[in-house]
Length: 410
Image (cartoon, rainbow, N blue to C red):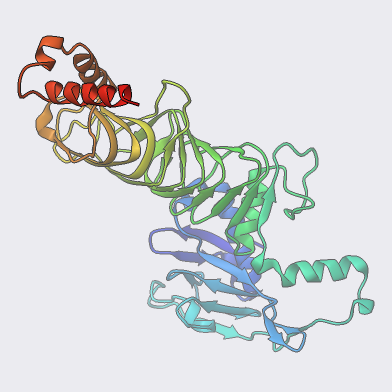
């Protein structure tokens, strides 16, 4: 029996199928069908999850709730548009405090349509019994369910066998891992090998083990957080990255903390980028660069940047950048011709463009080549100039001669 006819993403309405007319329907089955539709129709993944399944919540004394469905962010069920009666045999609630019939929207039905909704949730509870009352497998599964709300889903794409998502048996593909996490209302993914994100990933926490490479692959990653990974590629909407290596060509949009910069990075058009306590990861004379998007606009804020840094393509009136080195060396490229760039902190600066877009507030803002030029000029200071009456050279020479005379008396 088909339960869902269609899902309207913008209005967050789930339209029930004609097969539900006069039927007994459990909300868990609606939820499962929604999961299948969302997995097979990529357009539905542009919207936040419509509902989640929960259950086995502790009631104390070894008792737990039955499984139930929660409609999220204003989602409502719409009965099939014909006069009929439908019976809901499981618990359904909304995240704004409604239950049962209130989870349905009948306002859009035809004026002559009458739909009676019988809401008869089971008056049951799950009771945990001693291990001896269950098989070993049943006891293990019960323990897994009980702790499901606190676990992370593990994925290892290099594994030959596909597991169940636990640490001892990770999934070997990202699709199963994400499906499992979303079905259980989990947000944590632990990545054990390199992955390419091939679908939308919203509000997830992705943690790498062994610094795997995560390819963003142009996907929508709204609100997702990445930790201890090597990241690369383009993406849509801001992210959070902590203790990551940003590989060459990686897009920037969002918040970055304690990250290592490993090449040429590009701000997404219209992005706001905050990088806190990040550093160059290029040894020797090389240095990373950040392009503020030659074809678009960006706002870039580097706070406590360490090592080298090149700033490029600040070329729109609305472009703004604050570069705070602590300590380090920053170069502003000739492609920066408009907008506002403020240099702060401790380090060296080299400005290769028009000065009127630069506010240089750095401490010891001087190039090594200039330091060497000053040193050479001092070394080549002529003896005649050093002995001119009243010069600092004369004063120093007199002190040296006096000291030599003092040594000669001993």
